[in-house]
Each structure stands twice: as structure tokens, then as C-alpha cells.
Image (cartoon, rainbow, N blue to C red; front, side, top):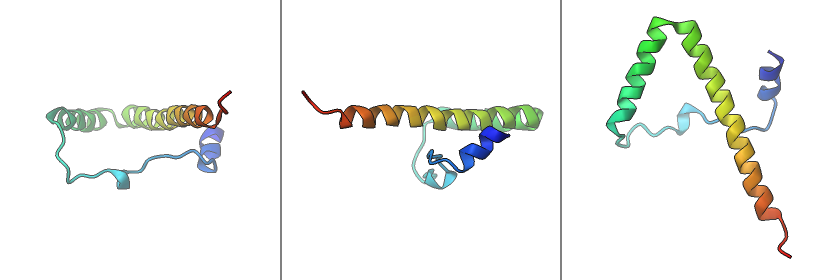
Length: 79
């Protein structure tokens, strides 16, 4: 619980569903993934929702590390 509380006040960027453009065409496999996720949530909601939320947090942390490395390489002075 403390980790989630710290993430709420951190400057780590988390993507929201508002950034998702639903009007664009998507591949068919994305529809299949969405259907499988909905069925999984219907079958076992606590486990699936917990897993999805942990994946969401992990994705944001991985993205933060990758962007930090990119910025660090750009800031390094050339010799």
C-alpha cells in the first residue's frame, strides 16, 4: 500500500485511457486480446484485475527507466 501511495505523489507519468484514440482502425488481434481480457475478468475478477493493475504500474516504471536513460545519454557532453 505504501508503494502505491508513493507512486500517487511521484512525478512518474502514467498513461490514461483519454490518450487512446478509438476512432482509428486497429488490427484484428487487438479485438481478440480485448475479448480475452473481458472474459478473463468475468471468470476471475480479483486475480485478473490485480494482475492488470500490477502490469500497469510495472509498465510505467519500465517506461520511466527507459526515458531516463535516453535523457541521460542526450545530456552527456561529447568529448
